[in-house]
Image (cartoon, rainbow, N blue to C red; front, side, top):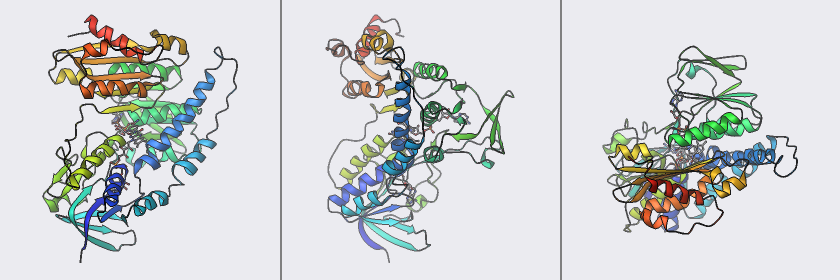
Length: 463
Ligand SMILES: Cc1cc2nc3c(=O)[nH]c(=O)nc-3n(C[C@H](O)[C@H](O)[C@H](O)COP(=O)(O)OP(=O)(O)OC[C@H]3O[C@@H](n4cnc5c(N)ncnc54)[C@H](O)[C@@H]3O)c2cc1C
Ligand SMILES: NC(=O)c1ccc[n+]([C@@H]2O[C@H](COP(=O)([O-])OP(=O)(O)OC[C@H]3O[C@@H](n4cnc5c(N)ncnc54)[C@H](O)[C@@H]3O)[C@@H](O)[C@H]2O)c1
C-alpha cells in the first residue's frame, strides 16, 4: 500500500532541498528522497568546496604579488589547510546529518534511497538495504535529480582510473602533475587552483578557446593569464586515446602528440540521466536529453522538474530560482513564468569571468542587429591602480534596434560582482541611453562598464 502524502521530491540537491523544505514549512506533508547526500553536488563536491580551494589559491596569488608593490613576501603553499577546511567546514567529511536535520526540522520526512516513478503521482523508493517504500503524492512529484559527469568516448578512457570533480575536491594532496580534459568551468577553475599549489597542469580543450560557451575575448583573456602562470593549454585538441601505467596517464592527441601526468581529471561537461526514473510510466521519454518543463516547471500533470535536470543551465542559482517557482505552483499561488534572458554565469578563476544573457554570437544567431562595445580593465583608473593581477575586460552586446543590452561579460579581479549591475540592465531592459547617463563611482572596477558603453556608442564594433 502506498503511503498518502502531499508531495514527493526525488533528489535533494540545492533544487530539491529548496522545494521540499519550503513546502514542509508551508505545512504540507513532504517526503524528500535522496540516494546519496542531502544537499547534492554543490556543497559536497561542487560550488562550495571548489570555491574554498579557489579562495586559498587566490590568497597565494595575492601574496606572490606583494614584491614590487608592497615589500617582500615569502609564501609556502600547503594543501593541508585546504583539505582540512573541505572536510571540517564544507562537508563534515561528506556527512549530511546537518542538512538532513535541517529538512526534518522543517517537518519534512527523508526517505533514503533511489526514487522512481511507477505511475502518475506514484513513487517507489529502493533503499540501500534493498527494502522499498511506496508513496502516493496527492499534489505532485518533483524531479530534482541533477546531473553526473559526461565521460567522452575517447578510446581507453573508460579503462583508466581518471578523476572526476569528486576526486579533485577530495584530494588530500595536490598531484605533481595533472592533465585536465575539458576547458570549461570545472576544468579551468580546478586547473588554476592546483597550478597555484605547485602542480604542473595541462588543459586539453577540444574547441578553439577555453570556456567556449562564453565570449571568445573572455577565453583569450583567461588563456593568456593561465599561460603566464605556467599552465600548458592545448585548445582545438582532440584526444584520440588514453592509457595508464604505473603512476602515469598518457593522452594521445589527434596528430600524434602525447601528454603525460600523474593524474587525469575529466571535466568534459555534465549530463542529465533520465533513465531509471520511470518517466515512461507517466508518458514521458526517458531518453530525452533533459526533462522538458513549461514556464511553471511542469513536465506532465502533477509532475514538476527543477535544477540541472531541466537543462536550463547547470548552476545552483538556476536550481534555486526554479525551485521557488515550483513551490509557488505547488501551493497554487500565481507568479511569473521562469525567464532565463538574464541568466548570470560566473567562472571563478582569477580573473573571474562573469557573463549574463546572450553572447555576441548568440545574439547574431537570433537575427538581432547587434552592436558591441569593449573596454579593458587595465586601461581603467582602478585597473591601473590595482596593477598586478588587473587583467580583465567588459564586453557589452546591444540589440541596436531596441537600444538595450541583451548580454554582457565582465572579467576582472571582481568580475562576478561587477556583473550584478549588468544583469539588472539586461533583465530590466534599461535603455542604453540611460546607462550612458548614469554616474559611475570613481575609481571602481565597474567604471569599465562606462568605458564599454562609450565604445558601443562609437559604433566601431557594430554590424
Ligand atoms: C566542481 C563543480 C563546481 C561547481 N561550481 C558551481 C558554482 O560555483 N556556482 C554554481 O551556481 N554552480 C556550480 N556548480 C553546479 C552546481 O553544483 C549544480 O548546478 C547544482 O548542484 C544543481 O543542483 P540540483 O539540485 O539540480 O542537482 P544536484 O546538486 O546534482 O543534486 C541532485 C541530487 O539528486 C540525487 N538523486 C539523483 N537521482 C536520484 C534518485 N533517483 N533518487 C534519489 N536521489 C537521486 C543525487 O544523489 C543528488 O544528491 C558546480 C558543479 C561542480 C561539479
Ligand atoms: N562557477 C560556476 O558556476 C561553475 C563551476 C563549475 C561548474 N559549473 C557548472 O557545471 C557545468 C559542467 O562543467 P564542465 O566544466 O564539466 O562542463 P562545460 O560544459 O562547461 O565544459 C566542458 C568542456 O569540455 C570540452 N570537451 C568536451 N569533450 C571534450 C573532449 N573529448 N576533449 C576535450 N575537451 C572536451 C567542451 O568543449 C567544453 O569546453 C558547467 O557548465 C556549469 O554549468 C559551474
